[in-house]
Image 1 (cartoon, rainbow, N blue to C red):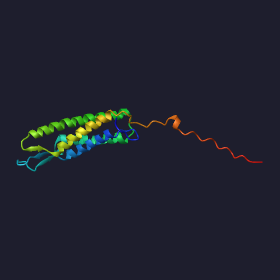
Image 2: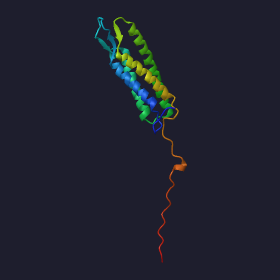
Image 3: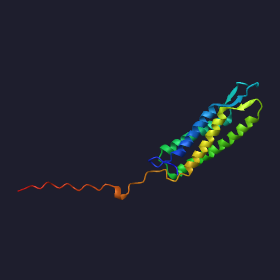
Image 4: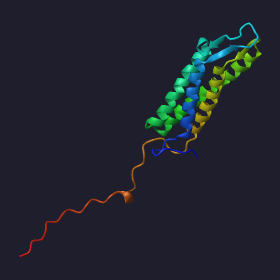
Length: 167
């Protein structure tokens, strides 16, 4: 069972989703391709924003950060929190799949190596996927706190009686 804050919102899944989104944003800015040492492209890099998938990674990373914020800060019903968790799982899975393909495709190219950005996006996709699954299987509702039981409510104070006067 996932630890929750005092207001009933899951913390671990939200933290993983937000961290995954942050790593995707950072990774999309970092180089996706770096020239290998000793080759004609040595020292040359190409940022992730130079590729269409890098821009998609940036968008998904921002979306995951927004989803983590919404689940943590807003008073969502269980249904709407689960919808956001499904969006996080699906988008992270797509980014994870394409990141694995990109790393393996770049590794096959001669004289270029995968850059740090691809690995950041790959790890961000894994964390976003795991965090989304944790948010999806959260057992406690992510909604308004329940009202206090009848026993714990304070009883109203008895009405004040006027002081008795002596004759």
